[in-house]
Image (tube, rainbow, N blue to C red):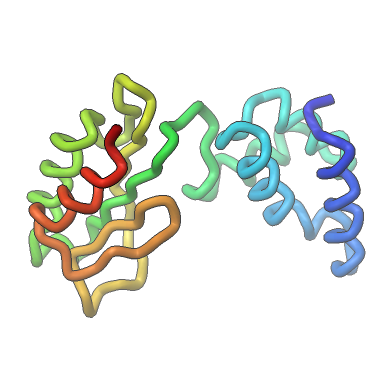
Length: 157
């Protein structure tokens, strides 16, 4: 089974806060993704399904519905460039082009060195400070391509 004993214990505690065990599925998938390699492999999905007494297809349905879950390996750093109307009107296309240039990753793909995964996402709630990107869960707003390059450049080896 892909789940560690520590994760199983954590799931037991987590599920105790919900009226039904299955209600803890989304937070459990987050924890699996954090602790088990950054993505949800078929083995992890099967193990989670077994723990939650669900069919694997039910867990896959949840994991594939939400964009914060990855069903294939992703780079060490995840760069999400917002493409909604506010960001688009204020230069998100140029921002995405520079992000791809600096990281060496195309949108929706990993860089060849495996350091970055770049994606375009819908609204992240930073509309007043567009354009923006989320880098490893941290919001960066009021960006220009040069500012984004400086931020990303600090992560390059």
